[in-house]
Amino acid sequence: MPAPFEKNEIDRSMHEYYEQRAEEYDDWYNRVGRYYDPATNAAWHAQVAELGREAARFGGMLNRYPGMRALDLCCGTGKWTPFFARSLTETGQVIAFDYSPAMLAHARARLQEEDAGLLAKTAFVRGDAYFLPFADQSFDLLFFGFWLSHVPHERVIPFFNEIKRVLKPGGNVLVFDSALRPGVPGEEISRRPLKNGSVHSVLKINYTPLQLEKLLGQVFPRSAARQTYDFFLIGQAAH
Image (tube, rainbow, N blue to C red; front, side):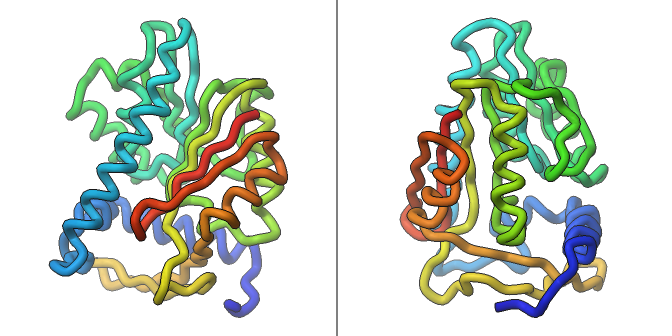
């Protein structure tokens, strides 16, 4: 178990880390620089592509009827945001939400580069994932990727209750995260270096599919989770 860590200290460390990491965050997805590993790169890219297919399937639900809204929570550099924006009708909208201004700037630039039409369907909002600045029942779909593993155990259920609050009845949730697998700690506070020479303390909690399904099931009436071949978790829940 990691050493005790005050909530505000966790939050401050995470905010500083991801604000400074924004410029290099996609190196992790792309397996370049310190993340390059010839032994596992092919499997990694295949499983990232599997996440992409799942994101496209999930985003495809947004064209069921006009005006549907999706929340891309803790969107980071917007890796998954286009998968949701592409499926929107003319009156639909995606909210890309993150605490980090630098991450939001990268997300905006990504959509602008891919398709200015996607940018027109997307709003960018800065805020705290634990206290969402949205009215009850605001969204049809809600996604968060690689965020749950940074949420302390005692804050998971309050966080799930908050996302349930902003989700419409019948709405759906999609979760991506790292999977607990051999050689990976279940829980740790790791020291992560960045290219600028800074080193940051980051809480990381890895779950099995069964653990994630049970967590989601404490708040949502329907939940399921599975693992890609080894690297990632895919969780789903319905309001």
